[in-house]
Length: 201
Image 1 (cartoon, rainbow, N blue to C red):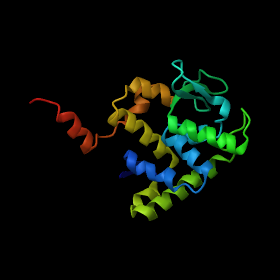
Image 2 (image 1 turned 180 degrees about the vertical axis):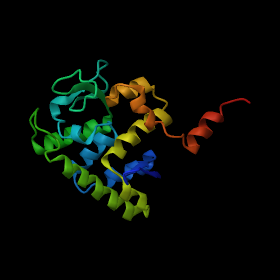
Image 3 (image 1 turned 30 degrees about the vertical axis):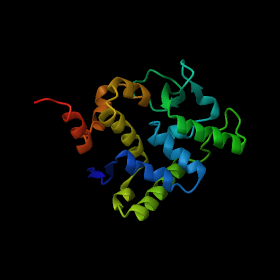
């Protein structure tokens, strides 16, 4: 795990996927795990997690995968009134998690999965991070914010999975390459070894 201190005293934390997975494992409730996974596995902003309801889970055109409809209140272009719409990829295991929670809690199509305020979700992440720090002995977990989950998701897709930046921009709701460029951190040693071992010099 790598952390960088910003000028305002906050931190940017860069996690591997294994390091990230400690957070949902450390969540103390089903709902907290869902909130963390919506950010870390689907790329949602913390405020966007509050609007997700069963009606926003849809199948892709091939009928084999799922996506999540997201209405973002954040629109820096000024083009969209009432929020900017996008669809993001919904991993199969997260879709199963949502379906199970919906069934066990009797949610209607428009009932939110996360029925708390934004600050509470931030506290949930802090609590899971503190538990992960205790479990692993890595105090960098205590520096993690909700935005680090979205950063981890984007960095993993761009650097580790080599997904096209245009696709990541569409899934994450970024309107320009400049907005996504900070998520392109240096590749990990594993990524370098994998790429360069196939090169003939």
